[in-house]
Image (cartoon, rainbow, N blue to C red; front, side):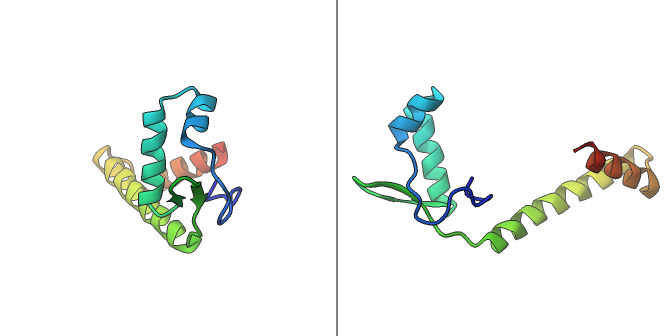
Length: 101
């Protein structure tokens, strides 16, 4: 929701215990997720106050996603070549995948 701008800078996040209860998951699991979001720069926490959405550089985030997509496509290309699939067939497969969504 942060990446899609459903949550914006300084929005208050649910408490760890409340979210764990709502999702029916462990408080420890929820705490780990919040810690990971904080480490990655998506949220910040004020002790005894709560956790909030941090202003994010969406362009930087998009660039990171683009790098991941490029690496995945390079790996798919390599796998295709190992299987004897040429560029035309790879493009047809990719076009099919794009149309599927």
